[in-house]
Image (tube, rainbow, N blue to C red; front, side, top):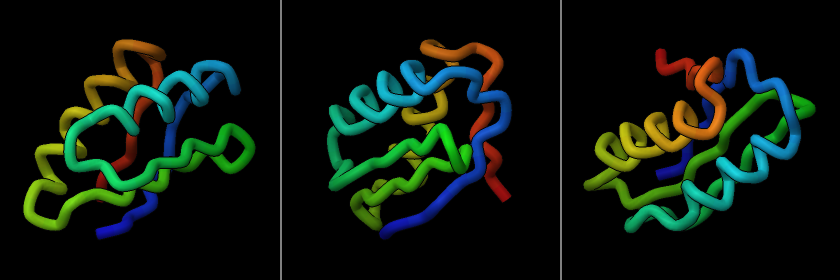
Length: 73
């Protein structure tokens, strides 16, 4: 499953790159891109574990950039 999420308060491109690298290491993630310019996260992960992987991705983002929030609708 591949979904795109808006990122609020992503303040630096370097932090976005760190997030992308860390999220790609989560088990079940096929691919991940974080765009500082568009303030978006695109996550491609296993369908059956997508919600759990997304929760882990949120934790990773908060650890790297505490003010950054993944907007989940």
